[in-house]
Image 1: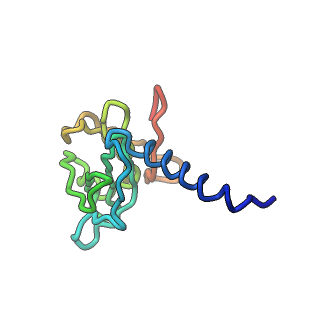
Image 2: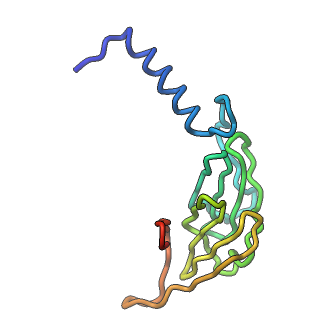
Length: 146
């Protein structure tokens, strides 16, 4: 089925407007986003997981160091997020935030939960399984579990 050309441009304009309005509602009007983001200039960081909050705050995890980074979708430069205990596990792969702004991240066999200011709220170690030590890669939040 082909779409008449006269309908394509208005449809694209409408879709772009809806995406811009939904992507960063707290930012208001849609603004051009950076072509690329700089997580860190430190060698070996290896950005892995990403989470973008409705207000435009973004978090990125480091598979290489365990560090977490924070930034805004409207700015190309991220900065280290003071996440107590995250680097102790050596790797942070999955990252997600909840409605309260808490930052959940996993790596190795450990899940950490940080307050929006970086204070460590909880750390949970996964038990060894039938194949040995756990190596957590990602996470999903549900109403009553991670």
